[in-house]
Length: 402
Image (cartoon, rainbow, N blue to C red; front, top):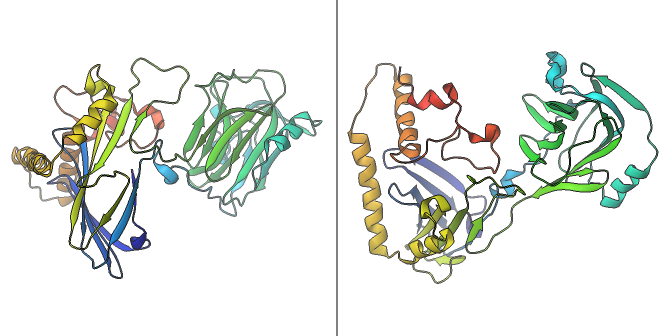
C-alpha cells in the first residue's frame, strides 16, 4: 500500500520501532501540518493496521493506493554507475580479478553496445537485420574491459552472441560498482537474465525457448526508469514494469506460465474506518482514524475464496471490535515477553537476544510453516535463493543462543 499526503511532502519525520508491543510509530511535520502514525500486524489474525492522528492545525487530504507487485516505484532504482565504472564483456570485474571462471562466457560476440537511451523496437530490429561487425572470441577464461559507463537513468544493452555452452552462468555484458552490479545481462542454464542493482528479470518462466547453441542470436535489454525488458532476435522475451495501482482490492497471482501447486494466491483488502471510500480520506485536526487491511492467502482460507474472506473480515470491523483486537494483540506480546528475560554484562550480546526473540515470535508459530531466509519480510516477487530454507547459519541465526 502507498499512502500519499501532499501537505506533508518533504516533511521532517521520526520513526520508532517498539518491539515490546510490535508496533512502529511515526511523527511527520511540515509547517502547520503534523501527523502521527502507529502501525502493527495483529498477533492473532491477518490484519495490518495503521492508526493516523492529525496533530496539526490544517486538514490533511490523503489518497491510498494498492500497489500490485514488488513494492512500487522503489522496486526499480535508477542505475547508479560511477564515472569510473567499467563495462566488461564475457564476465564481471570481480570474476576477472579473482579468476573466477565459473561465470565466464564461452563462444563469440559481436556489435556489443551500451547506450544511454532506450532503443525503440524498430531500432533494435534494424540491428538484428544489419550485417555483423567485428567478432571477439571467448574461451571461458577470457573477458574484455570495454568502456567506462556513466549511465544515470535509461539505457540499452545490445549485442550478437554465439554461445558454445549453455550450462551454469554465462555473463555477457556487466558493469560492476563496488559490491553491486549496476547492470548485467547473462545466461543461466540457457535462459536470459537481466539485472539492475540487484533487481533481476528472469526469463525462465516464459514460453521462450533457451538460447540456441552454436548459432548467432541477437540479444538486447532495455531500461527506461520504469520498465525492464529483454529481447531476443528483436522479439520481446519478457518485461516487468513499476507496479501500478491495482484498485481498492486485489488478488495477486504469480506471473508464471507454469505455476507450481504450492504457489499461493494472496489478496489485499484495505478499509478506512469511518469512511465510505477506501481510496481517499480527509483527516481533520485533532481527529484519528485507522486503516485496517486484511491480507490473506488461499492457504489460510482452506478452499474458500480468499478475496471474499478478506472483504468480509474488514467489513465486519467496528471501532469497538478493532479496539478489542488491539488489546488482544498487545496482550499476546505482553504474555510472550513475560515468559523469559535475560540480562548480560555484554550489552551487544544482550541486544542481539531480544531482536532474535522478536523474529522468532513474528515468524515461527505452532502449526505454521517454518520461515524462509527472509522471514515474513520478503518485498520482491523472486527473492535471492527463492527465500527458501537453508539449513545453515542463514536460517539458524535467530535460533542460535549459544
